[in-house]
Image: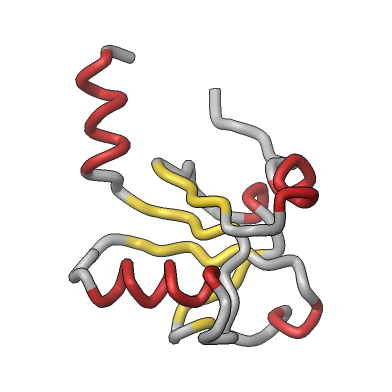
Length: 97
């Protein structure tokens, strides 16, 4: 992948995952999801939150996945909005080869 391709993923991703997404509007995970939507992003947004309370619920109308592995396609860009001690755990995923 060229440097230009890497920049395209950063600035024009086909999809975005928000690890730590939440419906609690006082938390950063909710602010990130709502800001992405409010800015007019038209592509897929994947909310990631392993909490049982989101198992069959949606966040701002978006399906919630328990982890990055469960997302049915390769993620172009992920934002990690979890407490520092959970960052490594949240990255428990595989990348497509």
